[in-house]
Length: 304
Image (cartoon, rainbow, N blue to C red; front, top):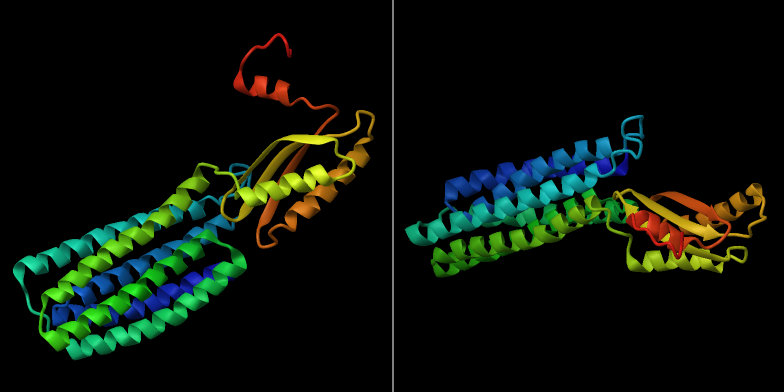
């Protein structure tokens, strides 16, 4: 089992335990903040289970139908996860607003405080574990999961603070106000996940620094005259690179392939955590302008 899949199983198992504890305390004690945290943990569990199957699918080898593999399932999963997080945040704000209007009381404060304290400790270690796996694999789904549980850590701390203030002051509206604040924070945290997923689905280029490094590797090779049409994208697990490199017109094909292999090896060293699919094109002269005309579907008699 890959580290990514193992991480999703661990996170879903931990989330299921937290759901049970928070849900019982939240419903019994009438705390909006604890109930909000329980709902968030329930969504965490469902999302982590979904992520397991998303990663499993994304790791499948390319076939005759999906010749580039199914890596973009990770991006789809990230968008779905971010959307679910946003919906949960909206619901929490609704429940908090309802409690403010109805002015309902919060009970079972001591058990709630104990439950949230335990939840913070468990979530902290889970976040550290997920961050470790995310750093090792650079997997978008695991990064999203880590970010999700990191927001849980802060929201749990806010719930604990709210319960402590209610315990000391007896003002129940503090619980509702903190619940609303947690909802807003959850929605804000989901934005980054959704944007990153959408950008991958739209074939956004690799980071500017990485693209610049690729260009430098190509241009610095002694036997490459120039290059053009450098294009990059990623599906979250595999980086795709295409470029045209200009070589001597009379160069033998075997020699051209040797040069391409040398360039590809250096590019792959830029990020050893990712798989790379690099497609070089050999040109005997710089035909960038001709390529641009053909790509844009325009006629230019001065070039053609």
